[in-house]
Length: 165
Image (cartoon, rainbow, N blue to C red; front, side, top):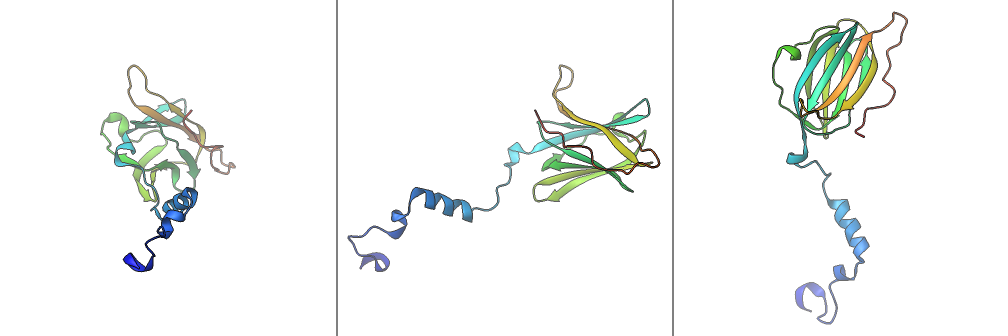
């Protein structure tokens, strides 16, 4: 019996497996897929603006990604992102103002990223959306508008997450 107990006239056992069973086995033993390094979005800047009592937070990203934002007490605003690379550029608009006081960012592991914006007062999310590149701005913009929450308002997650069209 050559080669480990198989008779010369028999095919190896793995060859008798159906292609579907073999595919299922291969997929089951593969490690969890992570995005390739060249497909991970890059966050280039975080900008703040104020208009009519609302504070706008804009996250500039080099490719289209989904995100969700939640206003929470006492922290402020938590933005959940897919895995991203943080390559922030400093500038006057990157300094928090309006209701925003400071921010932290990082990776939460398991292919996730996050942004935490500390607010001066409790807020609620008015709107969140994704804007595509424009003639004068080549990046995607994740936009979150917040305003001061009414005293009796319970701060809750915004309805739905923003997803790319």
